[in-house]
Length: 169
Image (tube, rainbow, N blue to C red):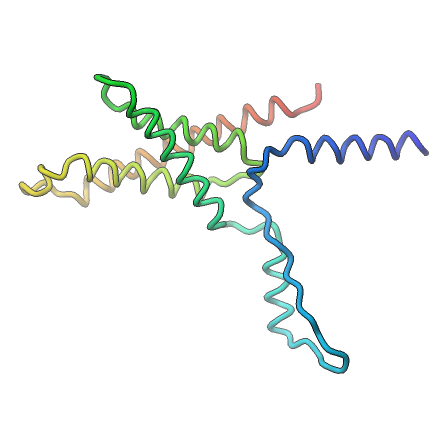
């Protein structure tokens, strides 16, 4: 019986040690004070249940971390001189690092961050051409789509590496 307790303790320690502090998918529990004699109404209990559920599909905090990772990757990509499209490689790098550090799958947040960052960078880098009559909507859509795909590919490979490194042999 003691062996099973030690095994459970080791499993819990391994799960807590594997997280690098970028767990962006959990929410804090909501506590409310209910006086004696008062009853909770059903809307507050439904709200509490939905906010304490850690299986949310979208998180603003995760989106901010994703924008930071993609933006940092794009800055690093821009540091390589005389090579075109290195910012796009930076989007892949940012998605990879985010996937490597995050403990949950956050494809929606990272896809949105990659798409908006890629589109905004393309539009801002061609401002003189846009002033001369280039269609910026198509440019934003194409660059945003490329940024979205590259961010998702980077996130996938980062999660794959994290899974391979943390799996027991």
